[in-house]
Structures are given as structure tokens and as C-alpha cells.
Length: 428
Image (cartoon, rainbow, N blue to C red; front, side, top):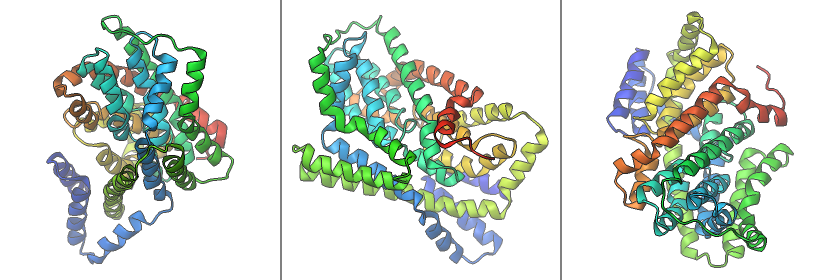
């Protein structure tokens, strides 16, 4: 019966039914088959979102939306131009560096692609870049958002897998920097075939001015990590302080921000949060059903009986995640895989923080792979380039990310070194 629940859920997801609806349908069917009172559905829905940790999700989303509404995206863009605009394929390098900075505020790949991506793609096409290439660079650079802290996906994974949000945030620093470095190398090599002009080298005065204007955004990730490490804030509290900070910037520092933009930021945050929380609540019902059927325990026992080394298991799970990334969105993968696979991997000695970052990088690759890759559709719509052309241009970035995925899988310390340094080695 347990296998039937999972198969039904996969069938609904493959059919294009929204994640929350698919989870609820399977959960209701499971409750009816089990003969349990339907009131359990309402109870588990309420328990699913009754968490202090989850408050961080809307706060991080609000911070990113307010920063975007305040015009900080243009200042980040100008800062990146001053630093790397004179490099080969300079505007593409600006795109990557700008996304790295913006990721320290939004924590969302799609927010990066839609917000900063609009500025970047327009600037690149005006400078002579092909729309498909500009869109591909924007989509690839946007995937850094959920890897480098803060990250809404990292918060959700930490909640489901019951691990430290702070450790998950720090786990993404080195992989995120690696992703940025790989993108810059790919763009540098591609610059040899691009007939585009670069920006003149900025003077020290121009760099200082651009850095000063972007400083409110540049200090955010350092302040967040410092606040959590010092014990001043929890992850949830630091998200709330960040949202308040963004609101003050929008209201005072960036005087050009209109009231309509601020209201739109709150509205977008409410809509996105509603969708995420509905998925989380429905996932809690499904997780209860899985626990009642002892599916996680059965999977863990099966994995232990196989006697395979942890590395081999991780490689097999990677293949599964890459295949799922082609047909499911990030939320579906996170909800479906985490409660089943994490207990099994932990039972054979895999660190859940390590696996969490492996999963997140997998999901970011999924944003770039058709037919479901949401980042591809967003940048294709912004640039006007056919989706097939964007896929062709984004392929080298996918290969680069696969190399990074292999490295962080084979060498866990690339993920765990910084969390262990700051928080100490986690006890099993």
C-alpha cells in the first residue's frame, strides 16, 4: 500500500497537478483507506505551518522584494560594472557578480532571474549580446541565489530534515563561490567568440563611489551570518530584522521608491508565501501518512541491508535527483525526497547538512533543464529568445554545475568545513 501512495503522488505530479493539491489528494485517499477520521487532515495541516522556523521564509522573501522595489538592483549592477566590467565579456561577468551580491538578499533563484535579470538582460542586449546568450547567463547566475545564504530552500530543508538553519546557510558558501567561479570561467572562454565591447576600466574613485552606493546590499549577508553566529539573532529573527532593514532603506535611504512599489512588494511576498506554506502544510499531512506506513523506516532498513558504501548511495541518489529535476519543480523534489531519503542516508553515516546542499545544487540544475526548468521560461520571456536557443546556450553552465555537484558529493568537507569551523563538528 505504501508503494501505491508514492506511485499515485508521482503520477499526479507528472500529470501537472500542483504539488499541494497532489499531496492533499494522496493524503486524503490514504486517510480514507486507513479508516482514520478525516479530522486528522485539518490537524496536520495546522501543525505543518505551526513553526517558528518557518517565519523566516516570508521575511526573507519580503526583504528581497523590498530591496528589488527600492532600486537596489541598479546599484548592484553599477557596482559589478565598476569591478569587472572591463573583463572579457565584461557585461556577462557583471551579470554573474551582480547575481552573487543579490543572492545575499533574496535567497531565491526565480526572484533573481525576474528582478535583477530584467536589468541585466536589457543591458546585455543593448551592448550587442545575443538575447539567447544573455538569457542563459542570467538563468545560470540566478541559481546561485538559493545556494549562497540566505536561502528559503535551505530554511525549508532544515525544517523538514530537522537540521540547523545556520549550518545549512554556511554550508552553501563554498559551493556558491565555486558556482560563481565556474560561470566566470565559462563566460571568459565564450568571450573569445563574442564580438562585443567591454566597459573601460573604472578608476579607483568610480569603484569607491559604486561600492558606497551598493553598500546597503553588500553588508546584508555578513550582518546576517554575524548576527546568528554571535547569538544575537536566531535565523528567524535575523530574517525579520533583514525585512525591517529593507523597509527602512526603501522608505528613507532610497527616496525614489514609490508607495506603489512597496505595496507590490508586500503583495508579491504574500502570494509567494501562501503558495509555499500551502505546500508545507500539505506535505505535513503526507509525511504523517508516510510515518504511519513506516515508509522511511522501511527504506532505511532496505538501504542498510544493501551494504553499499555511503558514497555509492549518494551517487545513486544524485542520479535520481537529476532525473526528477527534469520533470518536477524544486518544491516537489524537496517534499517528496527529503522525508524518505534523509533517514536512510543518515542511517549509513551521511551528514544531513551535506546531503541537503547536494540536493539544493541538484535542484538548481533542475531549474536549467527542460521541460520544467522554470528559470529558462522566465529569462526566455524577458529576453524574447526562443526557449530552444536558451537551452543550447545554457548547456555549458549545466556541465560546469555537474562538475561542482560531483566535487561536493565526493568531498563532503567542501560543504561541511565552514559550518564545522563556525559551529563546531556536529555530533551524530
